[in-house]
Amino acid sequence: MEALLRDDPDCLGVITMDGDVVHLLDRDRLDAVLAGDRDRLLSDVLDGPAMVLPATMAWDDAARAALARPAGRKSAPAVVEHPDGNLGVAPIGPLVEHLSESYAALAFQDGLTGLGNRRMLGEVLAAFDPARPVGLMLVDLDRFKEINEALGHGGGDQVLRHTGAVLAGLCAQAFRLGGDEFVVLIEEAVDDLEAVARRLLESLREPVLVDGVHIHVEASLGVTSGPASEALLAQADAAMFAAKRDRTVVERWRPELRTANPIDLSLQAELRSAIADGQLVLHYQPLVDPAGRVCSVEALVRWQHPERGLLPPGAFLPQAERSAVIADLTDRVLDEAIRQAARWRAAGWLLPVAVNLAAPVLAHDRFITVIRALLDQHGVPGNALIVEITESAVMTKPERSARWLDAIRELGVRIAMDDFGTGYTSLALLTQLPLDELKIDRAFTNRIHHPQERVIVEAVARMANGLGLTLVAEGVEDQHTADILCGLGFDLLQGYHFSRPVPAGDLMVPATTQVPGAGADQGRTAIDDETVGAAWP
Image (cartoon, rainbow, N blue to C red; front, side, top):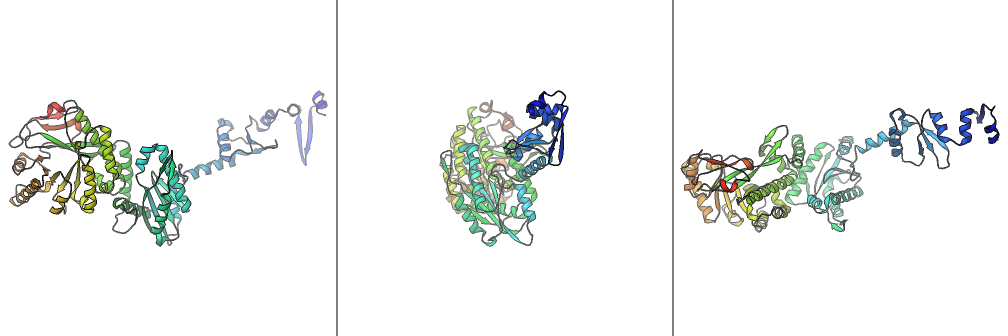
């Protein structure tokens, strides 16, 4: 029959029946059918080149293939080929709709762990019945930065995926906020969250094998409960920070734990970006001895904000100290300060750099490792660094602080008590701490001209000398004050009389060899990496 139809020149077409449906094939289409030219037939039916997709192809892949066609063909139907060879036609609408739904789902999903993301958490909290309490746990991994540095980002990602899998296996509603922070929502056992948290920690501590290394994941948890709202997240964050600071592993939020307001949270997020982008800079203020020699400098952090200009530490450090961002900030400051000390040493001047450490830092042994590693990395001895601590930081946990400072001192690092006189340090505690320097707060320095204040400063000076401590006066604003302090036996002076905090290349030091009696504006020399050795006596 096919041969007769193909060879009969008078055959103009063929009529076929498919049930009640009548099909008319003209001569061209009949020839295409007889020749088995599927592509030509499909092109005729679809008014253009046909896209044939296997019926087994995933919906997402099919939708992407359809949208990858030329602009004029994006909306054309797709041809579906079934395993038995039969063809079908699929409209493009359902494919695009499915792809749109897939992208919408991805907007609520963390790409690394598959958990819900921060946006999804907000949607879930908003959907809860406000009359029904819910428990929220904020999980923050400990020492994750060290894992990233040791194993690389690929190894760090494996640890994050492992953490996400553990949380998802234990709790129906687990989310990753970003970085190494996770959130778990608990609808049952709200009154027993601490027990749930500890079971979760036990599961996390099961070793995970990463590149042949068994990693034991540790975490700090903040827990809270109440009507579902964004306030729960702020409460859990405050509790988690307390757990990290006090090394208690798990803390439940209580009213005395200050929660961050929205401005604080925004600033903390912005500060994290600033650290990553290198917006934090150090300015240096010299400490001068009675002979006019610069013996050390204090590094003071500033934020070179892209919109608000150069911000002083008071504009961001208090918020940083209330959050885990203080760890990254401290890492950045220590790295740059020790790097600068190495530059000055290479230029011929052995100039120690002092760095202030906040109270939360003293709760973490990791900073001992960080300081040791940075000293080795930049090739300088421990005495190139001076660590400054405040009275309030030490008084939180004096025994632990003493052990921490002992470990730092074993590296050769000097320890200075900063702002002495403004806190509640007992004189007995000074004998128990491994101190090298005592810095008198500017509140006493500014009132040194009053007889009663001078008596107090004289007593402190005698005590410091008796303990073998280097005595430093902060806030020296004029030559007369410098003369009095030198007469009382102060070893080092610091203040605007000598120099404001400035970038390393702009550092100005007195060229005189004698502080007492010298004019405030007597010759000053700019110090940079090339001239440092010649400029300082």
